[in-house]
Length: 103
Image (cartoon, rainbow, N blue to C red; front, side, top):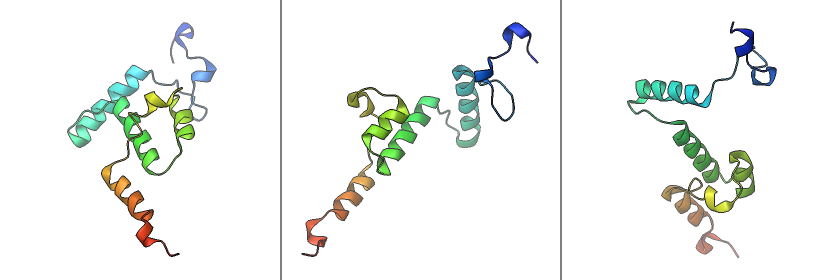
């Protein structure tokens, strides 16, 4: 148990385990170390965030929800994350192809 002056505030404790939250630096270090061991690439938390937002955008989550989740305040800064891949664009194009519509 840390000394009282170093003990985390109650808001910074996990409600289930009572353990203190990790700092961003410690979480990034652990994530990078584990991803290096598993994938031979040392990924960063920023790359994880980018992937999560991209996958949500590809799944059709609307931009206001993506902005709320990511904390972005303007659309321009979110655009670098919400870039659907070519397969997603092709699927959307095929789904909205006028030739497929029945009049």
